[in-house]
Length: 158
Image (cartoon, one colour):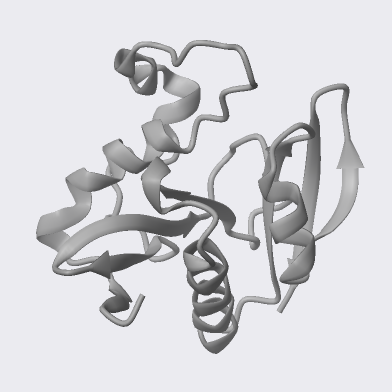
């Protein structure tokens, strides 16, 4: 991945977060992908609606050969991983063909540094227990602080 470049998302690129919101939906083995329109549901729109209009909106992207292939973004929002009004919630996704190559880990590590440099003390996320990404989150420093039947709530101290 010599041509991999990680950078902040530009304002004129915010709309691509819709693609990555859809790609972030965990699909258990044997299940069909939901229709793309699912991202219009209110509980999912909280991740992307009016992105860039709030001081706690942060986004970096992975670009390979001038194509955006992944995104990692945070904002303080009342989502599944919300723990308090000072902690940004984390979202990350890559197009399927680029998963499992270490790109997600690089995006997460870069975002964690960015958040720390901006003065945040921690970040949080919710992840389904069956999601292969749980292992990656633990590897970069996220710890399970709560769980329900389907999900872990994880926090990473910065």
